Amino acid sequence: MQKWFITLLVGLTLCVSSSIVWATVSEQPLNDAEALQGVSEGKVVFDIGMSNPQTLPLYLKVIAQTHADLVRQKVKPTIVLAFHGGAVKLVSNNRDVLPMDQHPALDEIATLIADLQKKSGVRMEICGLATKLMGVDNTTILPGIKVVGNTFVSLTGYHAQGYAAIPIY
Image (cartoon, rainbow, N blue to C red; front, side):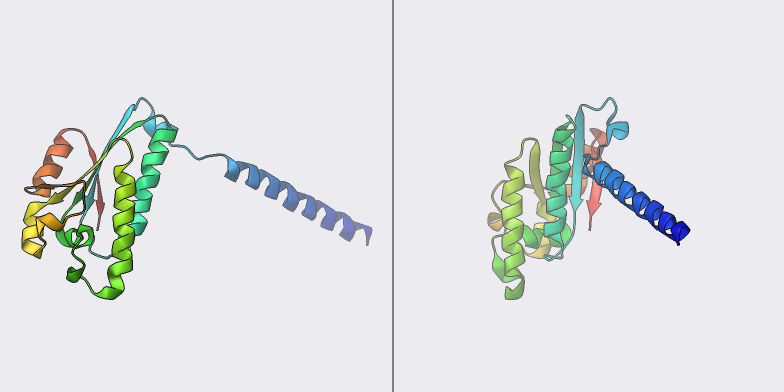
């Protein structure tokens, strides 16, 4: 009986100890120090062709977190969101392009876009070729999003300027 009790006590002690260690480790902020070594500016272009209004808000939140993580790690964010393809319908004030059941997601997208635009180093553009092909009037694009001729050309230019391209489809 005494051996069983000692085994139980040792097991419980190990469980409690490992829980305390895990809690301590998980409370410490994660970092990207190795990847960011010597980096003072984080130049990234998010290549957004996603047409799902239910999923885009999640990605916009991740982009906002990416901005915050760069700032937290003392890296100046220089971020471009480049919308094209079906995504052009999601960043328009014209609600007629999508069914009514998707309008709450469009409202959330508009709010997240406005919040991102308030962050230092963030700008946005939309493909004029895509708006034409998708039948989206450029005058209905959310405020602060610049209409450019062709985001594929823009992406080429950003790549040549050293931007990391992150596709979101």
